[in-house]
Structures are given as structure tokens and as C-alpha cells.
Image (spheres, helix red, strand yellow):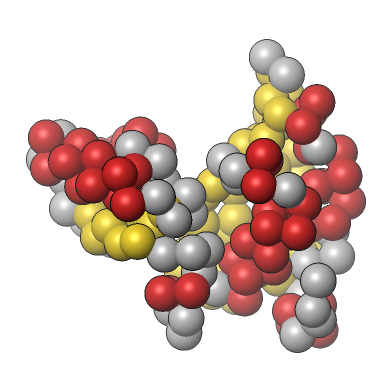
Length: 144
């Protein structure tokens, strides 16, 4: 989610042949670059223009990965997190890369209201990698 030019999605697709990858972004140029990079790297990936999960309604995923657009503000980011929790299969996960100085601790606290398990997988270079599993059904119907 928020694929940018596709570095993460293309890397995941290359490392996991046979997996189905969807890369979405609100920025038309980013989606175009992601599609080009997937093609250049010989991976098949769906790319689409979407404001968050707007065009992905009803889709379910095993893994959602994002480096959220911090400058968009907490309401936008927290909506992405909540919508992501709704879009994950019961045994799926969401992985988030976020700078400590740009709200990683508060993001973790919020994510703990959406998921039963939120683990810090890595903390280095000022970045946290958060692994979120087991979405809580009750939290998914709340508005932010």
C-alpha cells in the first residue's frame, strides 16, 4: 500500500515467485513507475491507482506492506492502518516501516487497538519495522 515506484512490491515478487502482488498508490506517476519496474524486473504485479484501499474494497490479502505517507497526517495514516486490518486474511499480517521520530511509538499504540499482536521486528537507523497479526474484528467497525 502506497507502493511508490515499486521497490518493495517488486522485491517481494522476485523473492517469492508464484505469489500474487498488488501495488497501489494515490499518485499516478508512482503507479506508472511501479508497473515499469515490475516489467523491467520480470515480475508480474497488478498496479492500480487508489486512494488507500478505496479501489480494493472486498479484497483480502495475506500480507500488506507499507511505509506510510507520514506527511499526510495521522488521520490519513490511521485510516490506512484500519482499512488494512479489514483487508487481511485471518492468518495474514501487516508490516509497517516507520521512522521513530515520525510517530512509530504512537503508531504502535494505535495498531495495538486493531491487532492482537504487534511486534517490533527491527529498530535500526531511526526506523521501526512493525509486524501486526490477528486483526481484532470489533475494532474494525469503528470510525477513526
